Length: 316
Ligand code: SER
Image (tube, rainbow, N blue to C red; front, top):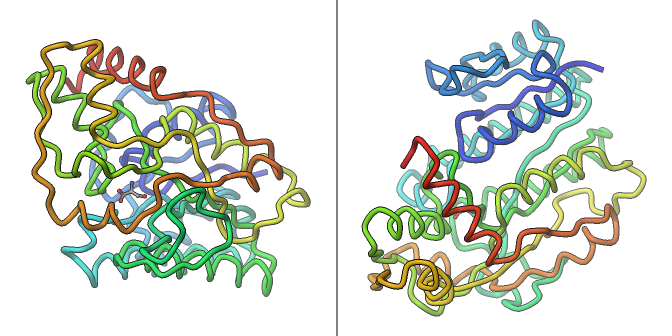
């Protein structure tokens, strides 16, 4: 059993995934990597490597030098920012995946985690209780790249036996690091704004409901899926994953219980159109059946964690 490499370790998920992997397997079993020249987590015992996933040679060398058997490929461009960088987003999201898939096909990696997203769904997918298998006609660059990525993951599994596991993450809510360029980022910004300004101007309109998940649940889902016996997995592409669903008006009302002065206004922009193309509530019964997925954080618990976390956090 080799070490675990997290690619995109400075991102929203990477920062917390590294902590959890180090806790479960030991810091010396985890290698963090990102394109940034410095590792943000100065106190971490985890070794850091500067790595661009598009640099296949360095990727190969890193995997060999550090005896890597498991890769968590988190480097990607999210939905909103991808709309402004179409070609770059496609290249990063697809070529990065191919580089890893090919190294696994050549038996240099044993197991891969690659996140997909609710963005694989589009305006023609059912909005409520969106099934695992349904029409996938995404209307964003990000969604198209994730949908294509899912197909390639299944192809590499069926044709070459590559063990790749994947989740269609909902919007992930967390405070330990800033999200970057997503549509669901409003559900994080709103907490910082409530605490620091008492006011938030939402780029998503009041009644647009989106599926969300608290980071601790998202990390636990990732670890559980990676640990699951492959024989129990009926999905070879990416699992629907769900926890909570709410719209900006609902979360604002909950925040008002704790900050009665809090005010919200709405100035929907292009991200609102993206949000409107996504489902409101996801059916994740296949994940629940296959590997026992169950979320722990409801909306109230998520809000309390966020508020306490931001108040105690250095990012505040
Ligand atoms: N959170 C992502 C985004 O908003 C969706 O997976 O882009």
